[in-house]
Amino acid sequence: RQAKRENQSYNEDNAPRLWILSPTAGITVLEGFGAKLDPEWPEGVYFLPSLYRTAIIAINQLPVTAETLWLRLLGRGKTQNQAVRELLEFPQGNAFRENVLELLISWRVSMEVNNILETEDREVFMTLSQTYQEWKEATKREGRLEGKLEGKLEGKLEGKLESIPRLLALGLSVEQIAQALDLDLEQVRQAARE
Image 1 (cartoon, rainbow, N blue to C red):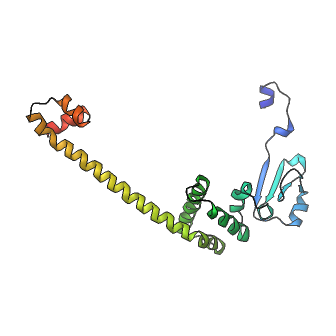
Image 2 (image 1 turned 180 degrees about the vertical axis):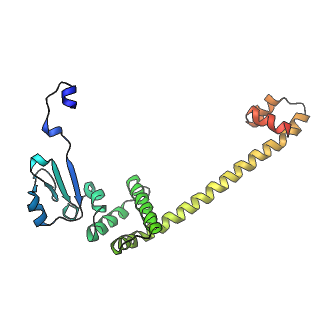
Image 3 (image 1 turned 30 degrees about the vertical axis):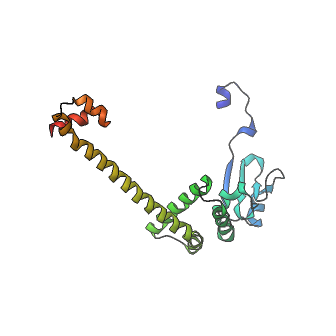
């Protein structure tokens, strides 16, 4: 339809493709679907006959590269454990590492809450447990720091607000006080009323 609207001929190569991600794919299943490897694609990516516009990705057969890391994290057993170890080798502070760990940790928390961790999942999380503990501690530290900072800022503001009546008594205008204390006019007016 889009090609018709844009007065272009339909190009089969631009049509969407269905990608089936599977932790494993046996020969029987692949042959049953008529799936074949394409030499232009990595090992583990099988294409069904062209009419189906479908590919099966056998995650356990993918090459161990940075490009396949995301997919291998979705695998099972050794494949997934290897991918997690690779992820943990990224330097701390690496955006990719931090984003993926955040997703994995949030997945773990939701699985724990719903009590549905399977044995395989527990093994993966044993690998991640040190990182999970570090994340928990960092989150607590961050919360404490934010709390301290917030407390300091509130204390600073409170000190400024308490000085307003004295400054008014000295004859300063509301505008002068607001400018000197770097406060909004409304904050100064409200403190003056109290």
